[in-house]
Image 1 (cartoon, rainbow, N blue to C red):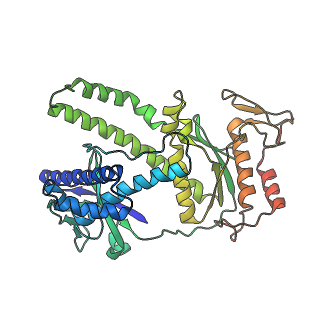
Image 2: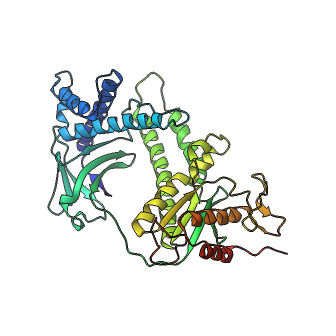
Image 3: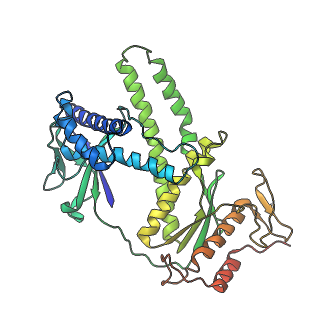
Length: 407
């Protein structure tokens, strides 16, 4: 599934109609959650039937204005949250299980999905019209993607997304992306961190950009300006709304900078290697450390892993998540356990190995990754998850990649 995104250009009254459609989608989702909480829904089909009841109810005339398939898409979102809650309960995930919550209509967030009806694309795919009861009209599409490349019949859904800087149309295209790539004959292990974004098994480091830390001063200033204009218990002024929107745009800029860096870094790592090994970190538990939570979230380790796995499928590169236990304490040269605190940044072992702590961990991560999938230095093994393990070949490759211990 591919997602192509274009910005919607229209008039102010058209954007207001889109707001009404998004608000109605939130209403349908919350109504479906309420029906499930009250015991009136046992399956997704029950929510589909309830969407029809909401549309025919004279108390909610706005529900009928929304396209029928858009109402069903909102019900699917409600059922997805319910299913996720039940799955977490079955798996006995520690902590909160994610009980479905009622959503609010926030001014700079929200989306609505249209399946096969409710919208119409022009022949040159430069304009899109929404034909449901809200009558938002025709919008111009601003983007660099050519929708004709895969065929208009491949578009499964169109999602309208509201952000701080405008409205966007996302086209969900039914296509499996597979890109050709020449095998490089190299493998790499990655150890993510805070001082450096990651250190690989070759000793190479990538600096941590710290997008949030660099923008924190500006964000605090904008937050103070918005707080001064807020009037508790009263209708908010236009100056407050402008200040709040400016603050939201700054946060959106930080998130886009973070995603841009992560995507480009993950693409470079995957295209340069035949196997990528990384730690199976539980970031959700790590951010419970309040001293490091902001820095961990700013580093975007979870997003980096998602994009590495995605590009691994696209380019046919094996990606392996290994358990992080003792990867920093174990010596990559003699496998001895050398206890060290977080403040100790150099690994010093009795066997004579002296190297950076993160480099030592990356070598251990690569070793665990090779034990999992075997040697990937040939075209036959590149990107294949069912690989034949050759212990001798793997050990030779590990020995070549390790730094010789200092005497």
